[in-house]
Amino acid sequence: GENVEQHPSTLSVQEGDSAVIKCTYSDSASNYFPWYKQELGKGPQLIIDIRSNVGEKKDQRIAVTLNKTAKHFSLHITETQPEDSAVYFCAASKADYKLSFGAGTTVTVRA
Amino acid sequence: ETGVTQTPRHLVMGMTNKKSLKCEQHLGHNAMYWYKQSAKKPLELMFVYSLEERVENNSVPSRFSPECPNSSHLFLHLHTLQPEDSALYLCASSQDGKRGRNIQYFGAGTRLSVL
Image (cartoon, rainbow over all chains, first blue to last red; front, side, top):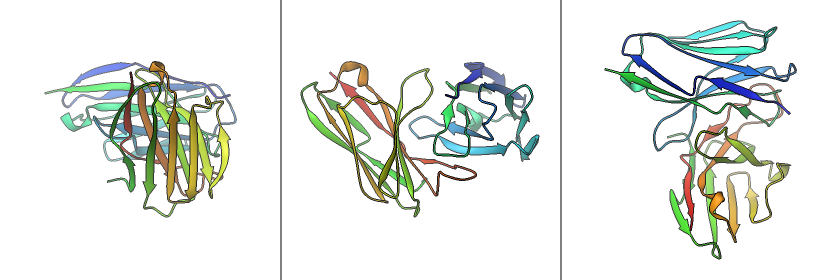
């Protein structure tokens, strides 16, 4: 089955700086890659996703890049703010029911 | 508010108890999911229902028993659990998991402690 690895497990950044989280996947048939944000006491919520026919996607301060050849994808958060502090999960899917998740990255934005 | 409501939010049970977790979605979705979330581990998919039919069961122990009476409600019945079953149990729903973007909407979870 699909195996998704996520790094780093924790990330501390100064407010206003950028944060980058990287994920690798094992199954070359995977073609859908969402990112979820989980705040304390809440369930994960989708923040951005990308399909394999696109190399990059941006939504305001967040962006995702995909390298199909290397089988890795990354989340970029620019101009970080305190409300960006949360746990972020990457996932990979072959456009069926199953999402394979990474282990998560705890992001802390220091004021 | 994600449109997926889970109750109870917290549950403490003994190893011999029987309890049930409830999930309700108000999004008109066709697929519902149960996940187990343990600290520092990836979310583990337990069960998937599509149009009330179970389509995936990831070798979950029989002490966990799902039930999907209709497309808006999902239950997880628990009996004779073990301490290692303590975790956050998340419910999710999606429009249609079979094609394209499988955007799953999660509830806030039930924090389960087994004593």
